[in-house]
Length: 271
Image 1: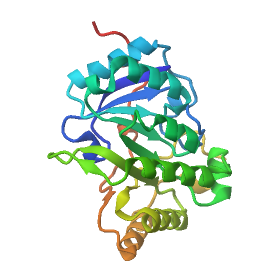
Image 2 (image 1 turned 90 degrees about the vertical axis):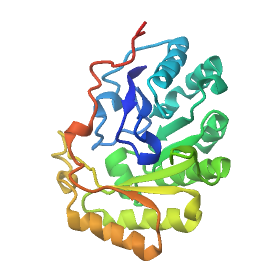
Image 3 (image 1 turned 180 degrees about the vertical axis):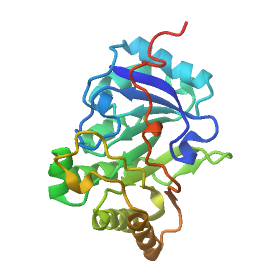
Image 4 (image 1 turned 90 degrees about the horizontal axis):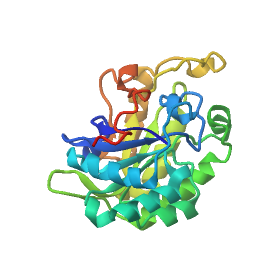
């Protein structure tokens, strides 16, 4: 089940570039984060069932639109169908990188199985604190899963590789969305990733947290991140010696950055 297939221009610059990333938004998610911005599809409320043949066709349609890559968003619960679709299309025939865009809560064995098909891992590392992982995502073992999954990702992809435009062809990007009141969590994650993997991964430190409806039971995160909190995290990254990382500036915490999933853009056969 997918809910949208379209060009997306707001991923990291090495992913979207000027042409856009060919995103395929799958319905459902291995996590159920209470603050999820894509909650319409993460909870499975939106989505249309398609065939493996149709998914393979979508890969080519996105390529024809000029996509820099095929960006598979929260699709690991359909991993074996994705593998079938890539085999059907022919990875070489598609001819652009495949990205696994994931919340980081994955079994390392599944990452290993997907690795021949995936060129880039665009993964979250959400928590360092077990209680936070349980409270916000009902996943007390998140930290252990994220660590082992990331280790597998880096071991199979190695150093990042880019084309002459600066678009990533192979590698691992680790995102961390800084949550309100959780700067120490953010600092611990950034330190762990940098000290463990150095320049083998690209860090992306996000300030775009947007409170969603239904957070009344979570008053501590029912607000936007402050500029002071975000700058505190960035200062720590600089203190660690991190020279290359993506950061966000300006007012990125807007609902307007969230796609409309109800329209099922790109899902139906356009021919």
